[in-house]
Image 1 (cartoon, rainbow, N blue to C red):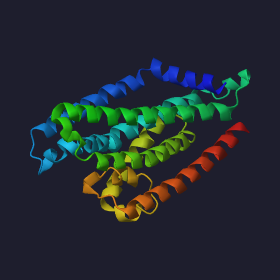
Image 2: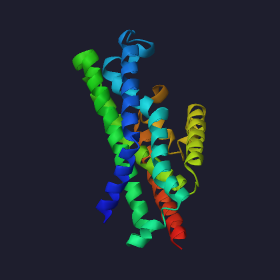
Image 3: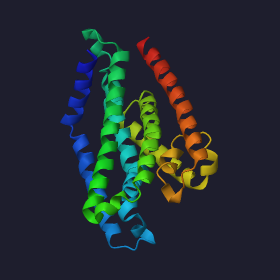
Amino acid sequence: MMIRLFDLQFARLKRQKIIYLFFAVMTALILSNALSCAGGSEDAGMGYYAGGRFPTMCMQSYIDIVGTLFLGFISAVLICGERANGMFRQPLLNGVSKRQLLLAKTGSIFAVSLICFMFVVVCSIGTGFFFWGNRIFAHAREYCLQMGLLLFPQTTLVLFFVFLSLHMSSISGMLCASLIILLVNNLFSQFFGAYLSYFDFMYYLYAFSGYNGAALTGKMIASGLLVNLITGTMLIYGIRRRTDRMIL
């Protein structure tokens, strides 16, 4: 039954061509980044990311706004859209509970998040190899560590969007809320990062990707993993509680 529910969620996304649009936009952005870096000096400006640091630049572009808003949109379509048209009640007629339906939708968002994340990784390395050859692997250990760590705030971000979607009544409202939260958090992360690092999981989207030249340290990694673990646990509890209230 759960496999069937997963298939239905992916079929819905495929019909709307949302994922294909993301692939097209992200490919164009990665190529634009490569062309901007190719003609610059490696000592300053865009040229700093030429070669071995190019995947880091592409991942920063992904987490900055494109990827984050895309996950918010996916959550809005799969969850807010269902709430708006009353479809959360319909599966009950076929013996499927709301909890099972929500679990399938959450799992689908996780899967889409991982697919998009890996697409950026593979496409950025492939594009970098085309432009700079083996120089793309000069800082492989650095960007592989960054991308591995970024999986943690990405996972927490999915849980956050699921939680937020369960409290929003429309797709447009969800998108507006996602954009406002993203912009405000981006602004505060740049000026108050030292304080946000103690409780804001979204801060580590930027910190783990080396945004604004932030250096990875053992203390930052430990703090980031702890913040994301605590926040993720709280979000899971909030999602379950909200789901139970919807069932009643």
